[in-house]
Image 1 (cartoon, rainbow, N blue to C red):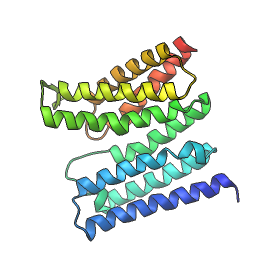
Image 2: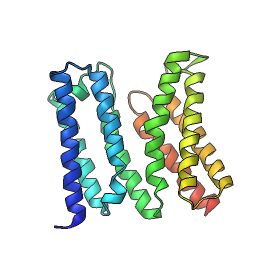
Image 3: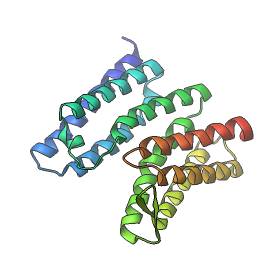
Amino acid sequence: MNQNLINTIILAGVFLVLFATAEWLYHVKKVHPELTRKYVHLSTGLLTMLFPPLIENHWLVMLLCASFLLILIISQIFNLLPSINGVKRLTRGSFLFPIVVYICYLVYQYYDQHSFYYLPILVLAFADPAAALAGKKYRWKPYVILGHTKTVAGSLAFIFVAFLISFALLILQQKTGVSVAIITAISVALVSVFAEAFSHNGWDNFTIPMSALLVLISLKEFYIA
Protein backbone atom coordinates (compact mmCIF):
# COMPACT_ATOMS: atom_id res chain seq x y z
CA MET A 1 0.00 0.00 0.00
CA ASN A 2 1.22 3.50 -0.85
CA GLN A 3 2.89 5.20 2.12
CA ASN A 4 0.86 8.37 1.59
CA LEU A 5 -2.36 6.37 1.88
CA ILE A 6 -1.08 4.58 4.98
CA ASN A 7 -0.22 7.91 6.61
CA THR A 8 -3.66 9.28 5.69
CA ILE A 9 -5.39 6.30 7.30
CA ILE A 10 -3.26 6.67 10.43
CA LEU A 11 -4.05 10.39 10.69
CA ALA A 12 -7.75 9.67 10.17
CA GLY A 13 -7.60 7.19 13.04
CA VAL A 14 -5.87 9.72 15.28
CA PHE A 15 -8.56 12.31 14.49
CA LEU A 16 -11.27 9.79 15.40
CA VAL A 17 -9.50 9.01 18.68
CA LEU A 18 -9.35 12.75 19.35
CA PHE A 19 -13.12 13.08 18.88
CA ALA A 20 -13.68 10.00 21.07
CA THR A 21 -11.54 11.38 23.92
CA ALA A 22 -13.41 14.70 23.74
CA GLU A 23 -16.70 12.84 24.06
CA TRP A 24 -15.30 10.86 27.01
CA LEU A 25 -14.22 14.06 28.73
CA TYR A 26 -17.68 15.56 28.17
CA HIS A 27 -19.84 12.57 29.13
CA VAL A 28 -17.72 10.85 31.78
CA LYS A 29 -15.61 13.62 33.32
CA LYS A 30 -18.33 16.27 32.83
CA VAL A 31 -15.92 18.75 31.27
CA HIS A 32 -17.66 21.89 29.97
CA PRO A 33 -18.18 21.86 26.16
CA GLU A 34 -16.30 25.16 25.80
CA LEU A 35 -13.20 23.40 27.15
CA THR A 36 -13.63 20.18 25.17
CA ARG A 37 -14.23 22.26 22.03
CA LYS A 38 -11.00 24.18 22.63
CA TYR A 39 -9.20 20.87 23.27
CA VAL A 40 -10.41 19.50 19.93
CA HIS A 41 -9.53 22.71 18.06
CA LEU A 42 -6.03 22.92 19.50
CA SER A 43 -5.29 19.23 18.96
CA THR A 44 -6.71 19.34 15.44
CA GLY A 45 -4.53 22.33 14.61
CA LEU A 46 -1.45 20.51 15.84
CA LEU A 47 -2.30 17.37 13.87
CA THR A 48 -2.71 19.34 10.64
CA MET A 49 0.92 20.41 11.03
CA LEU A 50 1.78 16.82 10.05
CA PHE A 51 0.07 16.97 6.66
CA PRO A 52 2.98 18.34 4.55
CA PRO A 53 5.64 15.89 5.80
CA LEU A 54 3.32 12.85 5.83
CA ILE A 55 1.04 13.34 2.82
CA GLU A 56 2.34 14.32 -0.61
CA ASN A 57 -0.94 13.92 -2.50
CA HIS A 58 -3.42 16.78 -2.24
CA TRP A 59 -6.31 14.47 -3.14
CA LEU A 60 -5.69 12.50 0.05
CA VAL A 61 -5.63 15.73 2.05
CA MET A 62 -8.91 16.73 0.40
CA LEU A 63 -10.40 13.33 1.28
CA LEU A 64 -9.29 13.69 4.88
CA CYS A 65 -10.60 17.25 5.24
CA ALA A 66 -13.86 16.49 3.42
CA SER A 67 -14.49 13.42 5.58
CA PHE A 68 -14.22 15.34 8.82
CA LEU A 69 -16.19 18.26 7.43
CA LEU A 70 -18.97 15.76 6.63
CA ILE A 71 -18.75 14.31 10.14
CA LEU A 72 -19.06 17.78 11.67
CA ILE A 73 -22.03 18.70 9.47
CA ILE A 74 -23.86 15.45 10.26
CA SER A 75 -23.13 15.83 13.96
CA GLN A 76 -24.61 19.34 13.89
CA ILE A 77 -27.77 18.21 12.06
CA PHE A 78 -28.44 15.24 14.34
CA ASN A 79 -27.20 16.86 17.59
CA LEU A 80 -24.22 14.53 17.93
CA LEU A 81 -20.74 15.27 19.35
CA PRO A 82 -21.90 17.60 22.17
CA SER A 83 -18.25 17.97 23.18
CA ILE A 84 -17.90 20.15 20.06
CA ASN A 85 -21.44 21.32 19.31
CA GLY A 86 -22.63 21.84 22.89
CA VAL A 87 -21.75 25.53 23.06
CA LYS A 88 -24.65 28.00 23.14
CA ARG A 89 -23.13 30.61 20.83
CA LEU A 90 -23.52 30.44 17.05
CA THR A 91 -20.25 29.53 15.34
CA ARG A 92 -19.19 28.16 11.97
CA GLY A 93 -15.50 27.85 12.85
CA SER A 94 -15.44 24.05 12.99
CA PHE A 95 -16.87 23.76 9.47
CA LEU A 96 -14.54 26.36 8.00
CA PHE A 97 -11.27 25.00 9.40
CA PRO A 98 -11.02 21.86 7.18
CA ILE A 99 -11.66 24.05 4.13
CA VAL A 100 -8.88 26.43 5.16
CA VAL A 101 -6.44 23.58 5.72
CA TYR A 102 -7.04 22.20 2.25
CA ILE A 103 -6.71 25.59 0.56
CA CYS A 104 -3.44 26.29 2.37
CA TYR A 105 -2.16 22.84 1.40
CA LEU A 106 -2.95 23.44 -2.27
CA VAL A 107 -1.18 26.80 -2.26
CA TYR A 108 1.82 25.33 -0.40
CA GLN A 109 2.18 22.64 -3.06
CA TYR A 110 1.79 25.13 -5.91
CA TYR A 111 4.52 27.46 -4.62
CA ASP A 112 6.55 24.71 -2.92
CA GLN A 113 6.96 26.90 0.17
CA HIS A 114 6.06 25.51 3.58
CA SER A 115 5.36 28.97 4.99
CA PHE A 116 2.28 29.19 2.72
CA TYR A 117 0.81 26.31 4.72
CA TYR A 118 2.17 26.72 8.23
CA LEU A 119 2.11 30.51 8.64
CA PRO A 120 -1.65 31.11 8.09
CA ILE A 121 -2.66 28.20 10.33
CA LEU A 122 -0.22 29.10 13.11
CA VAL A 123 -1.35 32.74 13.09
CA LEU A 124 -4.92 31.52 13.55
CA ALA A 125 -3.89 29.03 16.24
CA PHE A 126 -1.92 31.48 18.39
CA ALA A 127 -2.68 35.11 17.51
CA ASP A 128 -6.46 34.75 17.66
CA PRO A 129 -6.50 33.24 21.18
CA ALA A 130 -3.92 35.83 22.30
CA ALA A 131 -6.30 38.59 21.19
CA ALA A 132 -9.20 36.99 23.06
CA LEU A 133 -7.20 36.54 26.27
CA ALA A 134 -5.77 40.07 26.22
CA GLY A 135 -9.15 41.56 25.42
CA LYS A 136 -10.88 39.79 28.30
CA LYS A 137 -8.14 40.49 30.82
CA TYR A 138 -7.40 44.15 30.15
CA ARG A 139 -10.51 45.51 28.35
CA TRP A 140 -8.37 48.50 27.29
CA LYS A 141 -10.04 50.86 24.82
CA PRO A 142 -13.04 48.84 23.61
CA TYR A 143 -14.50 49.56 20.18
CA VAL A 144 -17.52 48.21 18.32
CA ILE A 145 -17.46 46.76 14.79
CA LEU A 146 -20.62 45.37 13.19
CA GLY A 147 -22.29 45.22 16.58
CA HIS A 148 -19.51 43.25 18.26
CA THR A 149 -17.13 44.69 20.85
CA LYS A 150 -13.39 44.37 20.38
CA THR A 151 -10.54 46.00 22.33
CA VAL A 152 -7.36 47.76 21.30
CA ALA A 153 -5.57 45.57 23.86
CA GLY A 154 -6.75 42.44 22.05
CA SER A 155 -5.86 43.83 18.63
CA LEU A 156 -2.35 44.80 19.77
CA ALA A 157 -1.84 41.33 21.25
CA PHE A 158 -2.91 39.81 17.93
CA ILE A 159 -0.50 42.00 15.96
CA PHE A 160 2.40 41.20 18.30
CA VAL A 161 1.89 37.42 18.23
CA ALA A 162 1.16 37.32 14.49
CA PHE A 163 4.34 39.29 13.78
CA LEU A 164 6.50 37.03 15.98
CA ILE A 165 5.13 33.83 14.45
CA SER A 166 5.49 35.11 10.88
CA PHE A 167 8.98 36.50 11.36
CA ALA A 168 10.27 33.40 13.18
CA LEU A 169 8.84 31.01 10.61
CA LEU A 170 10.22 32.95 7.65
CA ILE A 171 13.70 33.21 9.21
CA LEU A 172 13.74 29.52 10.15
CA GLN A 173 13.09 28.66 6.52
CA GLN A 174 16.53 30.12 5.77
CA LYS A 175 15.23 31.23 2.35
CA THR A 176 14.21 34.74 3.38
CA GLY A 177 16.37 37.74 4.27
CA VAL A 178 15.74 39.66 7.46
CA SER A 179 14.35 42.75 5.72
CA VAL A 180 11.92 40.72 3.61
CA ALA A 181 10.89 38.71 6.67
CA ILE A 182 10.14 41.91 8.60
CA ILE A 183 8.10 43.42 5.74
CA THR A 184 6.16 40.18 5.30
CA ALA A 185 5.56 39.70 9.02
CA ILE A 186 4.31 43.28 9.48
CA SER A 187 2.01 42.94 6.45
CA VAL A 188 0.58 39.62 7.67
CA ALA A 189 0.02 40.99 11.18
CA LEU A 190 -1.74 44.18 10.04
CA VAL A 191 -3.94 42.62 7.36
CA SER A 192 -4.98 39.63 9.46
CA VAL A 193 -5.82 41.78 12.51
CA PHE A 194 -8.34 43.67 10.36
CA ALA A 195 -9.76 40.33 9.23
CA GLU A 196 -10.10 39.29 12.88
CA ALA A 197 -11.76 42.56 13.87
CA PHE A 198 -14.48 42.28 11.19
CA SER A 199 -15.15 38.54 11.61
CA HIS A 200 -17.75 37.02 13.93
CA ASN A 201 -19.53 33.72 14.62
CA GLY A 202 -16.45 31.64 13.84
CA TRP A 203 -15.72 33.22 10.46
CA ASP A 204 -12.32 34.31 11.78
CA ASN A 205 -11.29 30.67 11.31
CA PHE A 206 -11.52 31.43 7.60
CA THR A 207 -10.72 35.13 7.24
CA ILE A 208 -7.58 35.18 9.40
CA PRO A 209 -5.63 32.43 7.59
CA MET A 210 -6.98 33.46 4.19
CA SER A 211 -5.90 37.08 4.69
CA ALA A 212 -2.44 35.93 5.78
CA LEU A 213 -2.25 33.63 2.76
CA LEU A 214 -3.28 36.44 0.39
CA VAL A 215 -0.52 38.64 1.80
CA LEU A 216 2.06 35.91 1.19
CA ILE A 217 0.83 35.32 -2.37
CA SER A 218 0.71 39.05 -3.16
CA LEU A 219 4.22 39.67 -1.88
CA LYS A 220 5.52 36.62 -3.71
CA GLU A 221 3.91 37.60 -7.02
CA PHE A 222 4.33 41.37 -7.01
CA TYR A 223 7.14 42.27 -4.63
CA ILE A 224 9.51 39.54 -3.49
CA ALA A 225 9.44 37.29 -6.55
